[in-house]
Length: 451
Image 1 (cartoon, rainbow, N blue to C red):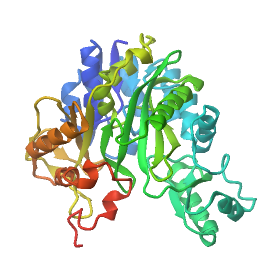
Image 2: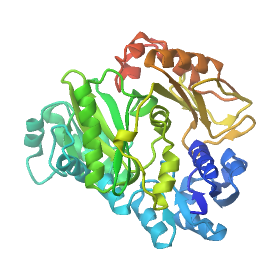
Image 3: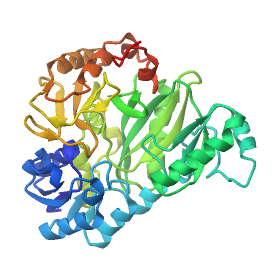
């Protein structure tokens, strides 16, 4: 691997460029017309403008990305997360064009992208799952009876869904038929497939996940993470390892995740996501993400392994060179997603010019940002400005360090979610790890709106 094209933007493009540079690999940034002058363009060895601002005409344009690779002589493509990262058709085009694809095989992406097939693969690997339908929902049958057998509440999920989308809750038999039809229409519009399935709904669930890594012959995990602090199924704060998880469940979650990777002969970095039901003391498979996660730095922090470096090594044909016994976990880490949004005004996006951007530092503090002061946040893309990652010897110390690091951040010219982060980590429920995936919405006044 001599020259790597990063088919992404923002902080993840910067992250990949930095790892490649340390490995002596030249980099190519692709940018839309709206992202001219971005940090990614500035840090890369070369850049190519691949289209106008709309993502469909630039970052999601297969032909434009491949043309940029040909134009610059790149020999590998890293998709980052989002955009084309879990697009099996694009991965196949990359490979067929003779480039190295930094990710798992397209067939693995297809398998795990189909949530009902992924659920069956998880069952085959011994991964615990929630009660639900075997495969996609058969609409010719008595779907009300199927729902009755699972029990209420339950959810209907898009088989091709992901990222918290394509999910509808059902609380009674009377809601089943209409909710399924709505979910099917939404799934067709969002994912071009109207296949859905049922799964038991967990009230006050926690969202936990396992970072796995493999080279097609050896598979390891880099510990687990908790991503329960969410707003409308979008992650806000993550931490590693997951606090308060019973040891036997933690072991089972980690071991079965590695087994799922082994059975699918997974190559690269991936994440197996679970729901944890504290009331029943149960864990259950949600999905497997066949890409780098936004929250990968907290796994790096506790395991001492550079995941992007490992992705590039594996894609280039190298072996991991270590086993699970060689990995030790140290300390506790938090990640705070800093978005250009106003949390006190229903999270309205806040595009505009960044007048000041002062980031925190010191021991155990890492800032992965895609923007600098003087740059403009455009309204065309995800509102993520960057991530604050904080590590210390244990959770209590990491929380104290996080409070200090968040207090140091200053962002002016636009609104950001930093004030919300400061409020969240000061909560007794967060300190005691009593939060869950709908916690933010359940606390009156937390978002600065009228109680």
